[in-house]
Structures are given as structure tokens and as C-alpha cells.
Length: 503
Ligand code: HEM
Image (tube, rainbow, N blue to C red):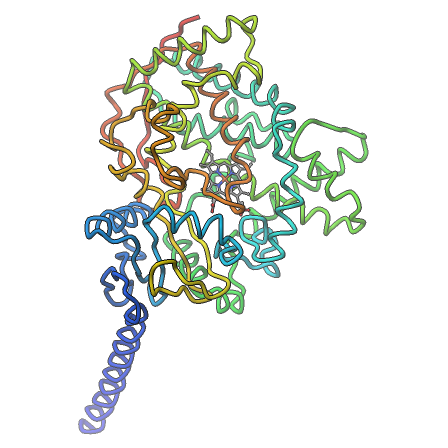
């Protein structure tokens, strides 16, 4: 009896040992992928690769990648190979290689390599995630949604939302307690996107527990399980589709479908037309007779505008107010510009007045330089591609990863990179930098489609706040830590500011 137990145990140990050996050699072999090229390889460690732990991270992926950028740059290399789990990734540092990949040779790098599952999770298939010709069709169709003419039409709606934001600050000042701006700015961003994209009044600045804000929050509240699921789906998309893995919980998907459904019906029955993105999307789908398909398509697009635009914009505005609170001289200079331009426009902020604010542009650009909300960019190679002046060939299916944060913190392009200095963006300094060294919205045909809208949301908010308040950092704000779990580059700690009314 004892003999049979010990022989079973021995068999199990042999099997386990063989499996471990097999996996070890399998990984070792996978990690030789880049060896045939003259390419520096960031040393991989089994099983996560070159980027540290996937689950128990010490820092966000964007920060790890910026450190790898620095490490490769210090070696004097213009590019590197790395691994995430078993997958090889190519990381260019040289702005010319980046420019060729993003712009000149875009046809070899059309895809974002973000997981989607059209069948089981229809909202996941949208302009951000779709690939090849499916993406081209939808991008061409949606591009007219974000023209400057359309932005101009939405200007007043955004201004009204920013007035609610200012009211909120006023109410909070009265409590005489320090208050965090991150949550309030998230409500402002939700209100703007709710009004302009979904065509509904969410009033989350007044009612932070509104359905829209609550469901919106849940899209970004990622649990550890979500992270594992997303990482698995990103790295093994075919298997994930086979396993019917969804990235968006069904109840959130149902909420957005219901909002869009009710809104389509309301506009059709009451013949309502508004100056918002929802109207543009409705018009784009006017020939679609199948009401369910129409609703699903509009929901997928409104949802991606929400998910890609809400957090990026609110985080950018939080970083901007944080730096303005730290640098009161820059805050003062910006206020002077805003007030003097408003004087020449009968004290009214118009689209034209906003476009005249050059220092504002510099402050926002510097914010997006120091704190790019999307800290890295990805492209998937769709046809074998040889990197010029090297023997490196990027094979079809291999991902290219660019560290926006690494480039934006590179002293070669931005001396003393931790200093917040809007003058880096005056024309003389800008002209000294090579193309593709400022990438907050990505670059090339697959760049951010909502760039103008995002900038408008942030700029209107900043102008309305700076015009009416002076603000400094409240001592309750320590040195804010960066969120290590979020895909967006953001603080995990709240930012507390003290506001003083000016007018
Ligand atoms: C400050 C705010 C924003 C920042 C920093 C930002 C940044 C980015 C970045 C870096 C990308 C990827 C670009 C690339 O791969 O080259 C992107 C894509 C995208 N963004 Fe934004 N974004 C912002 C606001 C918005 C807003 C307000 C919307 C919509 C209303 C939006 C919608 C999108 C969409 C749909 C894509 C995917 C485009 C495609 O794949 O064709 N973004 N954004």
C-alpha cells in the first residue's frame, strides 16, 4: 500500500517536473525571438517577460515602459526588442522610425491590437478597436463628427457644463473644508460627454450619484480579476473570443444600450434636433432600417467616445489645475491672458476668443507633455516590415510599442523634464524638436479622433475656473502617488486645492 502511494507520488512529481522543464524550455526558446537581428533586447524573465509582474504590479505599465525607454536610451540604442509574457514587442525610440511607422508606412501598421468580441460583447467593436478595412470604413464615416464647425456648435453646451463646475466649487468653498478636485472634474467631464455625446443632461456635478456617473465610474473601476482577464484577452485574443470573454460587464452594456434606445425614440417621436454628436451619429445611420442594428451601432460609438474621452480629459484637467496651483506665477500669467482677451470680446468667452489664447495652449500642451493621460501607444504590424538602416524585420502580427511618457521625459527633447515650463511650446522651441516627440494624442491616421473635443472640454473648464478663482495647493495634498493599476496615467491620490473667489 505504502509502496503504491509513493510510486503514485513519484509519478506525479515526474509529470510535474517534465511539465516545468517543458515550459522552461518553451519560454527560453520564445525568448530567442529577437536574437537573429542586431537589436538590443530588454532581458526577459520567465513568465512575465521584460516588463515585470502582470498581476502584482509595483507601478503602471506606462511607467515601467518609460523606465525601459530610459534604460535603452542610456545604452545609445535607437530601438529594442522586448517581451510581454511570450509575445515579442518592438520598441522604437528614434523619432524617425516612429514617424515612418505611424505616418509614412501606416498601411503596414493600421491596427491598435485592442481586444474586441463583436459577437458576445457588441459594444467592444468600435472605432478604437476594429481592424483593417472595418476600421477604415468606420473612421471615414465618423471623421466629420469632430470638425471645427461641429465643435463650434457644441461650444455653448460645454460652457454651461463648466458653469455648473464653477457653482460646485462655490458650494464646496462655503463648506470651508478642503475638497478634492479629481472627483469633481470627473463629474464635469461626465456632464460634457453626457450632453454632447449622448444628448442627455446628467447633472453629475449637482448629483454625483446620477445613474450616468455611477455606471460611467464602473467602466473604469478595474478589479484585479478584470486586469487578468484583459491582459489574457489582449495577449491571446483568439482563445479569448473562443471562450466568449467580454471586457464590459453585461449590466453596464445594457445601461448604455437603454440610454441610447430611449434617446433615439425621444428624438424620433418629438422630432428633436440638437447640436450634439448624438445628432451627427443619428444622421450617419439614417438609412439603417433595422432599429436594433441602428441602436447597437450608435451605442458602440457613443460608448467609445465616452470611454476614450471621459477619463483622458478629466485627468488632463486635474493635472493642469494641479500644476497651476503649484506654479502660481504661471497661473497668474494665464489669468492675465484670459482676462485681457475676454476684454476684447465683450467679456464673453467665444470659440474665437478661446482660439486666441496662446499661453493657454502652451499650458495645456505642457500638461499633456508632463502627464500624458495615455502613456503608451501600440500598433500591430499587418505585413512584414523592414526597419530602414537595420537588419530588423517586424513580422506580421508583432506589436510595436511606443513610450509616450519616455519620449516626453527625455532630456534630449525636453531639458529638465520634471520642470513644468509652458515656454517649451513657444514656436522657437517647438521648431527645434523633431516630429513625433510630442504624442499625447498619438500620431498619423490612427491618432485620437476626439482631439479637438478633448482640448475644448479641458480649455473651457480651465478658462472658466481661472477667470473666477485663485487657487493654491491645500496641505492635505502630499506628494500624489501615480495609480499603478490604471491604464490611464493618473494620480491615485486626490488633489486638494484651496480656492478663493476673484469676481
Ligand atoms: C485630453 C484628452 C484626450 C487624450 C489625451 C486622448 C488621447 C488619445 C490617444 C493617445 C489615442 C490613441 C492614438 C494613437 O494610437 O495614435 C486616442 C484614441 C482615440 N480617442 Fe482620444 N484622447 C482624448 C480625448 C478624447 C475624446 C474627448 C474622445 C471622444 C469624444 C476621444 C476618442 C478617441 C477615439 C475614438 C480613439 C480611437 C481612434 C481610432 O482608433 O481611430 N478621445 N486618444
